Length: 394
Length: 121
Image (cartoon, rainbow over all chains, first blue to last red; front, top):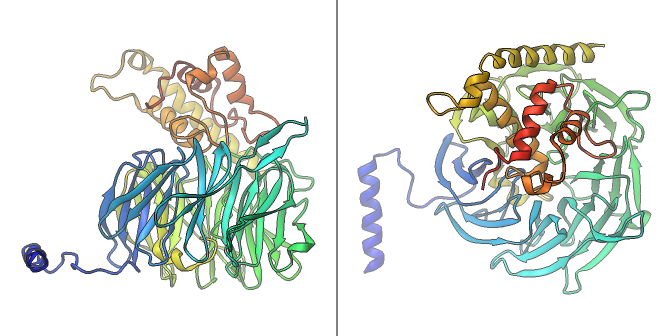
């Protein structure tokens, strides 16, 4: 009887609000979340309709926040700076559960099987793993290391991703190491690898084979071949800025969003106004593309035809689009002040771009490079579509 | 070469903006009539909260960089904070801000950090 009442009640609402209203039953495949970093809120959006469906508030300090999704793409796990891990429901647009799991955190990942959510922490350092259903603590990895002065501490962890085999992989900023955490059974086994100096972020290739950490402390990247972990970490693109004065870095580049196109990898250079191009077969440096500032995100459109680049402060009011074959800049777009993030629709026909200080998200057609919609948002930063639920490392 | 020119150009733009801001100095001290901070002050405050906040957290409780709340800076004179903001911290991720900001702008930011005026609860 109650169910009947609900059905009538809901259909009544639909009749009242007209044919454009949201259907009562909805999938989540074309939904996503936009982080509003200053107000501690997220917008639930629909990519097909270029529409904000609702706002979820009360998520704490969302500077450098990120999101991963449950396998059914209904729930988003939002990682906040203040150590908050919040599970939100995109359908009811509400908070399902929330824990403050550390004093300061930087991001996270969900395991291949969807059972575990891991959070990368700064204070105290390390990684904590939670049950994705209940947010109960499952494993605590303090990332203990010994400094050059012989003191032990807990390292800040960065670049946490999931990998095949129900692994989590992450890097230790102070310790200069890469660790894998095996969550395939109860032992939660850790394997340590030496990496380079001060890894600041990392990515894993879409097939889950190569884990690559960017190094703040040196010109180069550290790579772990997950198919051959016994070989240890190798350094790729060493000394790419040799003989050049490194510029001050006003925003750390992000490696997630990884651009691979035409057999080449495109990565941001730290401290240089360049996008580096590496040959994927031997990881040699084959080209440097001069761009208008220090790149933060270097992202290939899903068809790999073009590379989209955003920039660090202060040259951060433009996005440059590079042809992946000719490596020429084909367009410089102006989405607004302080561009922070770009997210492609799963098949790549559109890209959403957040401009923090213009309080706006602009949607571009990736073929014409013309804007097709703008949405208002309060200091928008990260944009995360539910298609991430079905991709490794996102 | 081009890079140097770009940096110089930007510096000039910020410097001229700040000079314009100096004429607003009384309003900066007293607060403007409508209760909103003057644009130059608002721009710098936004810079501290949002861009410094990328590393130090929006609430300045720390991140990759250390916390910058008044209780963390209590032992440092404003001049020392000035020097850190201006020159950066070699060997760390803290960049020098003097290529982008004038000494007066950096001093204003240091005073705000020391007093906690920009810290949200």
